[in-house]
Length: 317
Image (cartoon, rainbow, N blue to C red):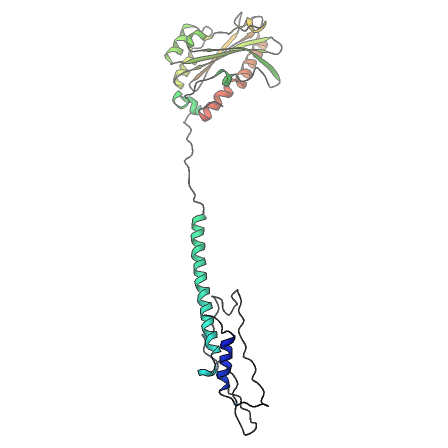
């Protein structure tokens, strides 16, 4: 249903002509205003506007009467006239109601569609459980059960040459043992390694750039942190890592003469060192400080860096 077309307007004019006599000199009535249509709702036809002709109709204007030639009367067209004199207002009213109904239905459908789309496209917030790091100072590395992957030489000693705090060092030889006692000196230490379920002992020897300080670093893989602590407590002047002589002219002297030894526990690992002067001389206070400083720098750049990674993730870097 819509607005009247031309044929309907012609019919309306013919019907309206029944109420006036044809006079050649009488002026034609003015054309009734026709509401304009638009693809967009106007304030008068929007869903939030007052429906057309829903309010009380204004008072009917009095018909215009012309006194001319025998007092003949002719009424003008009124949009509020009733009966067959005016079909235009009826079509306009029905068309307005149809437009209003269509707008209301459209708005309801848009609201429903928008709501379902918002519901479908709105992201669902989920909370994934955060990984739980085992308690303790060494995290995953506290126990082999949470850090099960075996150690590798490449992991512990990744580069042959490196520098720490302005001091340069070079790795000259590496070794990997399954029978841990073969890489240790002293019965007490060997027994602690065996009872602690040691599965591997990795060693490497180093020298400083000047070739004055040389030493060996070893890491034993125990079952638990308690086992590693027992290995550390077994370390002494007679129980320490077995020095690993290199094939070069400098580190081939590792293990000869006097030196300093130490064993630390890092989770279920035991870190063991032996460092000395190249000539094997007994270090004085000054050289002893230099030797221990070199041992700390070497282990910091190699084995402790790797083991800290395992403490955080339970996996090698």
